[in-house]
Structures are given as C-alpha cells and as structure tokens.
Image (cartoon, rainbow, N blue to C red):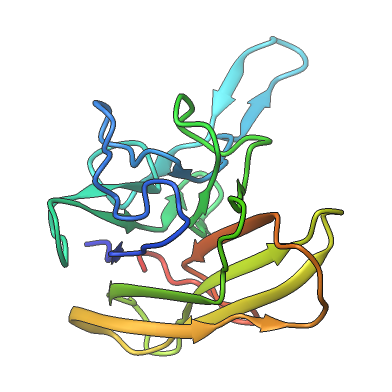
Length: 200
C-alpha cells in the first residue's frame, strides 16, 4: 500500500489554510501539483501511447482532501505516485496558488501577502508514513519583496515516521529587508538530496 503525508491547521495569511474548502472533485482548494502524464507518439503510425501512472489514492491526483484531520473536517493529503511504464517514482509536491477556480498551480503559484500582515513562521500539524527509513519530506515558505526578490525562507525537514499528528514550527530566516509582498508555500515528499520511495 502507498503511504501518506497529511497536513492540517496551517493558519494565518494562507488561502484555505485550514484545508476546509474541498472541491466536489475531492481536491483541496488553492493547493495542488503540476503534472503532465508522459505521452509517446509513434512517428510511423501516429499512435499515441500514454504512460501508466499509479497514484497513492483512488483518484488520479497527488494532492487531495482527507477526513483524517487534526482539527476541523479536513486535512490535505500528499502521496507519491509511480510511473509503471518508466519504472520511476513520481515525487508528490503540494504548492499553494492564488486561483480557487483551478485544480493545479499552473502559472499561479504563490499568494500575495496582504497589507500590514507579518509572515514570520511556518507551522503545521502532520502525519508522515515513509516507505523507506532514510526518506524525508520537506515544507518550505519563501517570502518575496515588492520587486519579487527573496527576503527570507523557512525550511523544515520531516524525518520521523508518525501515525499521530505532530506539530512542526520553524521561523522565517530573513536575509534582507523590504516590504513582504508575496509568498510561496510548498510541501514536498522529497527533501533536498534524498530519494523518494515508491509510496511515501
């Protein structure tokens, strides 16, 4: 079976930060992952062949809503996929984006920081089910100034398996001054310099 990483109770200046807005298609509003299924075309016949993708849930998505929530009714669940055709793990990643009408970030990744709001930390509750003992997941928040340049970031590696909700908090480490105007938030099933397992 495939394992999961589920997040809940991410608050403050975040669109659908409590994950309570779940679309009719079971996807979490304003969170998702860009992914295009590989297609091969036989140049002689013109026949298309689509890679077979196995997802970590019953729906064709890497990021979706689950009722296994820390608080409220829903949490966000992230699950790696597997490209059966190419025998490759597909690393799942949830990114916040600013268009509730879309299912995937597209070009809309990130959200504006409103007015006088201060973004100083990244905190969330999570469960983590890695398949291999050396796997790590990662959460990241990047704050940009009015010129679109990075002002600071908060990065948290998730290393320990846990079947009960744990709280993880990390402050934003600012490297320059400016007016916080925009932020990116992502949860990845693969931390930097690590390899994802077949079903993390």
